[in-house]
Amino acid sequence: LSFCLGLQGACCHIDTACSAGLSAVCLVRNALYLRQCMSSIVLGVNLMLTGHVHRAFALAGMTSVDGKCFTLDARANGFVRAEACGAAYLQCNHAGDEEVSRSYILAASVRSDGKSASLTAPNGQSQCKLIATAHSTAGISAEMLALEEMHGTG
Image (cartoon, rainbow, N blue to C red; front, top):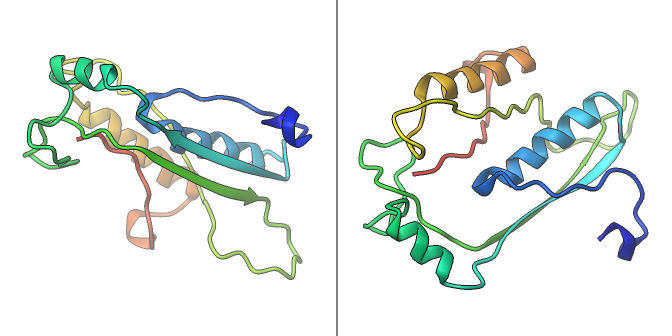
């Protein structure tokens, strides 16, 4: 993509399964904060081009038998695959800029769950620490937030 468009600077592919888009946002947000770049385009794409992956996930018991995803709910019994594409243009907010930003990413955090009951089972303590890290980095409490975005597999 960088070659075709003549773009310069960092260009990377991130494969963290279904959290790749938010992982990319985290990397870009931190690069902007550290002034390693002044702007960036973040893209997240998931295409289901063949059925063999879905069959393998279903046979492994990873997908929901109900066809519904109940993230953060006791009814959760697997995830639901879907195609999606999302993009965002992120840039540094400079003091004195006349252009008003519509939103700010105060913090972004990424964390692996580590050891849990099974490979696909969530680790609640690890996920709570992830959210606490993001709040601490932003310097705010949960009550002060207007919006909090997260990835959650059912």
